[in-house]
Length: 376
Image (tube, rainbow, N blue to C red; front, side, top):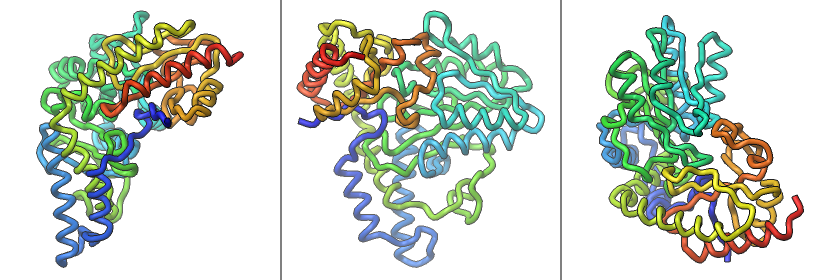
């Protein structure tokens, strides 16, 4: 039995997404910018997906812009907003546990003269809104925080932070990388107080290569890809209708069951924790109140890479952290106070509502075997 527990890296496309993509490739393959009927049919597919995604976050349809993925969405948000608002206000505030596509982008902006402040968790491993608010001032143009940390499942205090900051400094642009929270946690743009939101298709049972940037009306973002006038000039390039169709289809399927699936995965998380509690030498790195979709553990004295390959031989697929880090430590665990050998032995298990209890049984059994057989 093959057991796939690396859903934070990517999910299996659902049947509806595959069917929508296939239809757009074989039946409605026109260029949505073309003025003939084939182009119009393709444009209607894009329009439908745009509305479905907008409705899913309580936004208006014309605030949704399609990109090639969340990495591009994050780059567009950070580079585009800093270009628009960063001439006089040269400070950017982020959390110290952001995805590489945020951290490396602001590091580049830092090298070009922006002041970047990275707010770290306190000694208790938690991030506090007050710490972000304290770092913001009249010179701050942008504040960026992810909703759910992709390595530990930790849920950041985005709503509280953005609300406080907007009250004190209404001109600061707020951006949230919602990739690991979208379609898993309730998400409404008005409640979140976010001016910019990044989303990804392949994390929610759509397909790779498509993302979204929500841009609140009235917020200026300068394009980083220029050429045609697609996506109102914000993101030039012919829209990938098959990928967009798949994204819309996945959202249409998942949106009505967010709470139901959250409760189901919460039960799976508790089941998993009970199973691995019987395995000696296992420490849980994820917080109790984190997203149940991501569980990070450490197998004491067993290097992550060795444990991963041991599990892989049994057709059990997990990861050691963010897929974007290619197996290298990103430093995020250290920010949460998980360091040294404990960080070196970290394993991330990420589930969906389709994960089965017997798959978790197989993982726990293989983990126990690995703890006994692997030397280090």
